[in-house]
Length: 202
Image 1 (cartoon, rainbow, N blue to C red):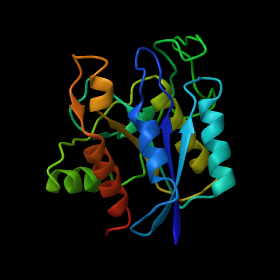
Image 2 (cartoon, rainbow, N blue to C red):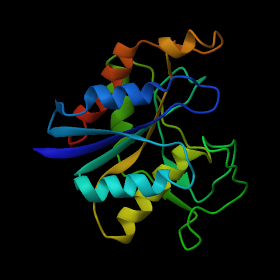
Image 3 (tube, rainbow, N blue to C red):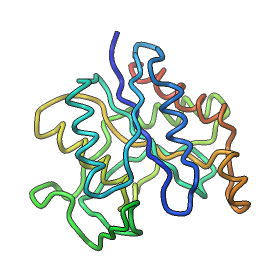
């Protein structure tokens, strides 16, 4: 049985609920396709999030890594194509703000996902779940975690599929903010399990 590191985040900014936290907790210790899932929750902190996912990788030694993040306002699942070497944007949960800061001063400008993102989108659409590839993971903690994990794997010559997927708000979060499009928790879980299920398809 292979091992999958599946990460989400705690609530952040004006989002009192983060559905990725619930998803990874529910899928922790489950078996999906060829994978035993190790669900873990990351902090929303520039100083800690990247270090934490590397520590989790080194402890678990997974065969694949999928990181999830909330894109409140999205109406579809969006696997990310690329992460860039930049921290910027709103304050994190400690109040720290980054402006035009490199994640790694010796790192590449950008690094591409090694997950089968086109297969993810095709499989989700076949299940009737709206999805499309995104070409920008932003410059907040989602991008930070994606970039940090991918560059670590490159530097250590580890051919482990890794990348990031943004998900919409849950209905529970939309109850707190009437402007948000939302998905049911059941459909969010279905979307994530669908992607895991096609990880190893040719």
